[in-house]
Image (cartoon, each protein chain N blue to C red):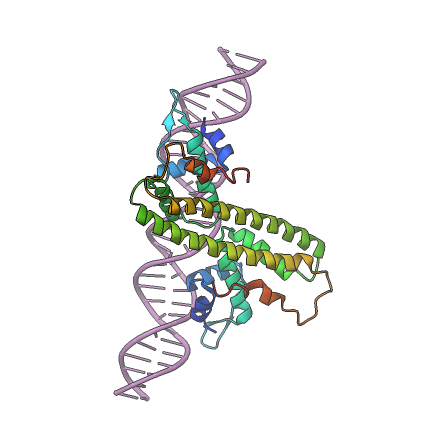
Length: 133
Length: 133
DNA sequence: AATAGTGCTTCCCGGTACTGGAAGGTCAAG
DNA sequence: CTTGACCTTCCAGTACCGGGAAGCACTATT
């Protein structure tokens, strides 16, 4: 499968895929006789994972760690486990933050123009609910 | 409140707060006699919102829109509503993606070393579940 | 077989969103 | 009134791409 196809199936632009290869986030893809990069389903799954993780605010460095966590699943299972659990906590924090944002936006969307009493604490809604994160 | 304090309470570094002011994402803060930037609770709430939104993969441009959505809540309510609803959909997609990542990591964490049969499709778990997003 | 079109390659430049460091002013404590 | 921790501006650098040029590869047609 060529890079355009892999891009389409993963949701990452070809440019980004080449960049990830360049910085070693993903291994260098195999090449066809003509010099084209060649991808299989496994590669696409990793790319898909990367698109998701990056879109959710994980840095490339964090993605690197998450990937190695996957690749090393056959050994050093204690370390892998504790790291995975840490990441799960972080993900759950992010879920709570998204739920807070959703709640705030729902208030904004449902509120009829003129409904608001001057003391309506919508601003508090906006940023306080998950302040302790 | 000075910038260090605002940084601490919002979770954004002082550098980033100054940068947001410079690009007009937040209005220029008031100044003390000594020339220090001065913040109040409202400012901190906005900063906290920005930290969360950025950490969840929203671009600065999207944050700008989300903020204006909040600031314009008193007028043009139809537009505000449709924009808010769009954002809610996006947020819900992100939540699903995070839940998928969490599920994958849980598999990794709970799997005992040696438990895996060669055909165990953990890689499929890794990236396929939310492939249609 | 030649050609046209699309997609691939590398390379280099530009852009966004910060981040670190230097040089110097401000403030509260001792 | 000096020390140390904070603040200020400014300039440079870094991370993560995206645009566009120049050229090769593949497919389809003529």
